[in-house]
Length: 348
Image 1 (cartoon, one colour):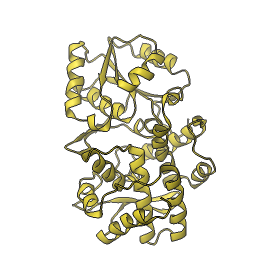
Image 2 (spheres, rainbow, N blue to C red):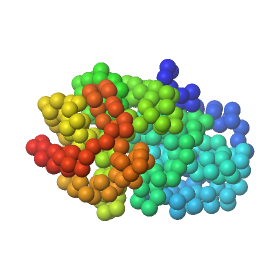
Image 3 (cartoon, helix red, strand yellow):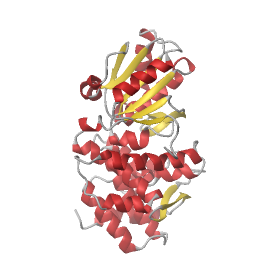
Image 4 (tube, rainbow, N blue to C red):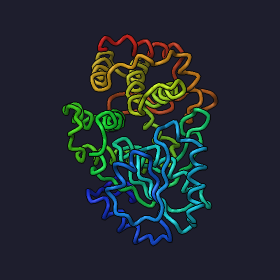
């Protein structure tokens, strides 16, 4: 498919495709990394041609060095060699962490990602960014490494509840905001539903990320636009994790997109009425998050963002729908205004 990395494969028959690929790779052993949810709902959809199942606890809070050590221990105990293969069966946490442990085990073994959430299928699985959180900082330790394959199939989306699908939908929306205004228009013409025919949205969303990554694989420039909504969104997500509050990644990104739309307006790039319209639409999908912290708390978290330069917080903001500018700096008052804007919206 034009614009996509060669390792991306769409296939409704995921089981057949996975084991056909494994046969071609001819590893000496195959291990599958799962969490308790994918072990229960997704692993039964695959034939039992693997040698080892490695299970970790689900959740962003477990994407850390301690969990990596547990995985490395089990890989070692199972006798995995440099000719072995790791299949990462799960969402973004499993894909990020599984790819990282595979890339570092014995200086690197082959791995395949089989993303099972909408979020991981349209975002985390594409582009070769792997890593873990460290001391409360998201994706602070990691590497760039492409898997041997990413196998996308909507068969796994049928195992998800509506909240998980809605979380992934935020990244679909983001792709329209930053790259393709007609795609965003198509999204807005649909009402979100967990009965969605995901194939239609999935293909275009993956194409968009693939086109961007192909042009800038190591995030030196253009790829930074994929962070729209994420600078403030990651800070909101980290705040919730640190305070034991429940929040999914896409829910945080939706909050971040609303506040960063406000920043775009303050820079004179978007009209107030358009920002209001788009914000109200996002609120209609995701609702109001009361526990979004104040500007001081957000700035303390955003200062550690990997896109920053010389201590300055860099944003990726919209010049218009379908056009995004990276390495944008704003002042403290503008950040305070964006937080106030979010809390002041009268669509709660």
